[in-house]
Amino acid sequence: MIVLLFAHAALAGPDVWLGAGVTSGVGYDTVNGVAPLLSQAEVNLQADWEEVVVRVDLDVHVYPDDPLAPLPLPVPPEAAYVQLGTSAGPYAQVGVVTQNIAIEMWDERDNYMVTYSTGWGASNSQLIGAIPGFRFEDGTEVFLAGGYDLGWFAPSIGAGVATEQDVFSTWSGAFLLPTYGGAFAFYSANEVYPLDALWLTLQLEGGHAGEGVFWGGPLFIASLFPEAVVGGAVRAEAILFGASEAEALLEVPMPPLALSAAVHVWPTDWLYIAGEGKLTMTGGASIPSVALLVDLHVPELE
Image: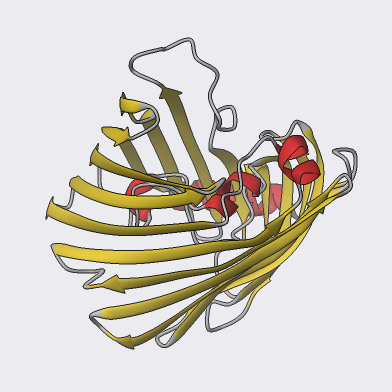
């Protein structure tokens, strides 16, 4: 059946898109001073047949001032998979795949803020494996995931549901790393659109690692004019509690409160500029910071 599907798709001829991009910036905080942001260069390829998609997204990350520094990100590629099924009904992605859970994406231009949330550091990464799922007529997807996690270098299993509707969206699910201290986390990311100029996001996350338990959120984002040339967002995130055992095993800090405000500008569909001011409260101290991000890219295939 799969062979026949590929043969039929090959006869139809694919729609091919080739993309590329580069992202960099600079930040400042009262502890570390001025430092360049983690930067990215990427090359993307996508080929679409009627019911088959091939996607490759190769990213190279680097700290401009220290190219040999270890990176707090998964090894490339970000994606490299074949997807069978693009319309309503069952589908499957096989290769290097990522569960569609949580509000944030790897490419900063797809996020409301320049910096990532605290909960992002405890999330799962891409898998060498498979995601089978089912897509309903309205675009809602339910899926399972299994494979080898390239961020934690451990086997991973997970499940989730994702949908984007006119008034409500969600990207929610959970994953388990059974051999990595039994690490488990869930993400419930939900968004409503009361106005075209105001989108509201609420994300809750929690889990455990080893003997430590953490409860993240509420992560709240109010995005103003998100689809306009000039827009902005505010974010508030509280980690209600995070055991030191979980932080030590996951090797990610979990400050109890962080407040951010950001502005973004889209001068063209290939240039994205964003700035953010942030206040992180941890260990009885308040750490202010600012960040500026510039992204040049080939617009994504619609």
